[in-house]
Image (cartoon, rainbow over all chains, first blue to last red; front, side, top):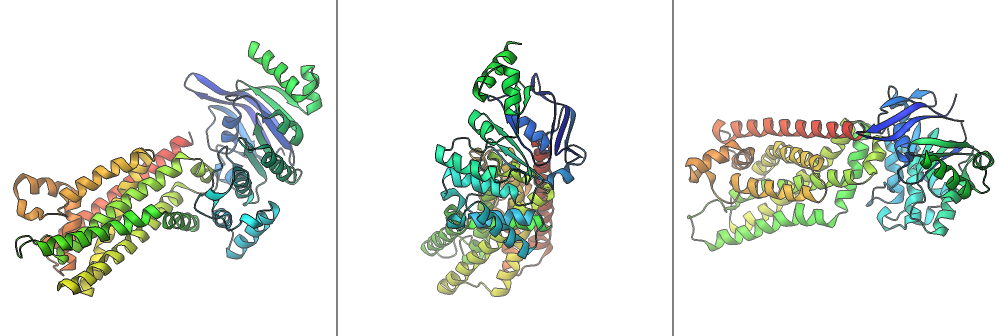
Length: 243
Length: 255
């Protein structure tokens, strides 16, 4: 069973096709990146996989569950860290995590244990009792990812997790994401080449709602006939846009 | 329901940490209570009775509930403007969990607000020689619950329909309209004619009427029972409409 599978997944908004017949399969435990420029359809794809948007046609599955007809089951096995940090600003780090753990049905002792575990996992001990709105962008992103992990998801969706972060905060977040590799399936959207190159097992390059290339870094370089992800991406993107 | 209580707990914690909440939900009604008592003490005795503490306290309590509406709309519209609600949409939370999670904390805040207002009113009553009694106060707080639900329902509707910049403005219109046509700052009964007919077409008048009657332990059909039933009906209808609007908006967001 694939962790994520889409079959001709399509999303149209009036005259605009945001995602066009997307078919892909992601193995369990894989860190899979959706790479593309703004408006390529990455976030729309993630929204459909997280049951936040209904496909216009086609099918999406998470751990074999249909995102449209079995959305409640899908929601109980996924976690999402949206593009914006999406934290409760006046709650502390600990309170944010406790709140999310209650949403996922943990009992009082379970909430505390899971919260402590995630605070330790992300090294947030020193900010644990600080209100979220007082944290730097990097800490807020870490909290956002920790909140996405609280329900012990089988698939984690990270939508542009390092957008707007400085280089140090970005590197620190990369380490946190790398630590998840192999333990759960991670679907990462980004338009940072370096990020996709550094973190991903496989990469899909999306151009105008379609997959223009998919595979490991080496496979993408081969498909593009260029060395380095950035060169390969530019070659594939220009080819895709020319069509 | 467990998830609704978790969300309610988040909402009440965030609201109680917002300084504006204290100013508008607790400070402003208290200031109005004090100012209007000073006005009452300054005008010739017997000419105007609406500012007597027995009439003023329930009126101010209704006025305070209108600010609970403002905060409900702000809470909902602010959550909607960011991605926090989107994160919750991707969890097993349902529309019912979310709407109940917005309504429950506002009801608690409304209760605390009424308790604070009437505590202050009781102290003022002792000072100025009013006739407030504890039984009437407790009954009045209970009578104000349907009114609280009515204003929370309005807040939910405005929070769904408008963004965090326009929702407060819309609520201000209801606050002005409600305090004027609700007979909070004047005796609507004494106006009569078209003015009284207009007041009686809107639920605000009945909020004030039922609250004043319960405080004075007047349980007549015209003074208490009918106004309370009207407020109960309107409160249930507006809250149901607010919940429906929220569910529809959620479905549209997930479309």
